Structure formats: C-alpha cells, structure tokens
Image 1 (cartoon, rainbow, N blue to C red):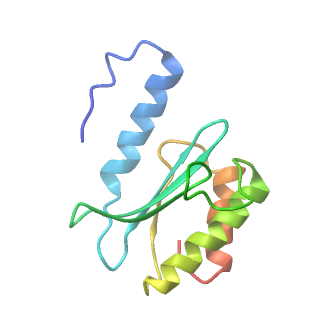
Image 2 (image 1 turned 180 degrees about the horizontal axis):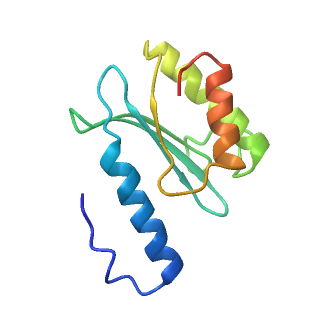
Length: 125
C-alpha cells in the first residue's frame, strides 16, 4: 500500500497523501469491525465498507452513477441522507461497529455530518 509521496510535485497533494498513509497504517478492518472509507470530491461523495483481513469490499454507496443514493450530493444534508443509508445497510448485515477512515481529509463539514448520521442510526463509529 505504501506509495512514494516524495515524487508528488504539488505541496497540498503531498501533505494529503502523507496524512492518508499515516492514518491508514494505524487502521485495519476485520469482518467484525470493518473499515468505513470515505472519498470526497468537490461534486461527489463515495463510501466503502471494507474487510481488510479478507481483502474484500462489503458494499459501497455513491452520489453518482446508476446506483446513486437518491437525494444526495456532496453537501451536509446529502451526507446525512447517505449516513442513514449506510447505517441501514450495516444493520442489515448485522455489523454494529466500524472504523472511520477519513482518507487524510479534515473531520469537518460533510465528513462530520456523515459520521454523526451513522452514529445517530445506531452504529458505533
């Protein structure tokens, strides 16, 4: 998983990759407690629930594509709706706890509202 971030030319991107690798080295999901990885761009939000011990993605949800969650966008209200859907899917799979992987992004705004929404719907994050 280690990528060389010394070759990255943009300073902001270099800091992001360094933070991402630092966070990722401390988090490892299992079948009982999978990793919830969040990717955020300016327009879209993507959530994956990953079992690292089996190298398997359990499920994913996006704000784009054919299987997009209805009424979501990359903003705080859209993240709340997506958090409810993720928590519902986790409950259906009988998963009560996940590890939150913020992918080097700051825990504010959209990411915080997503995590809070998942917590409010009964899943430990």
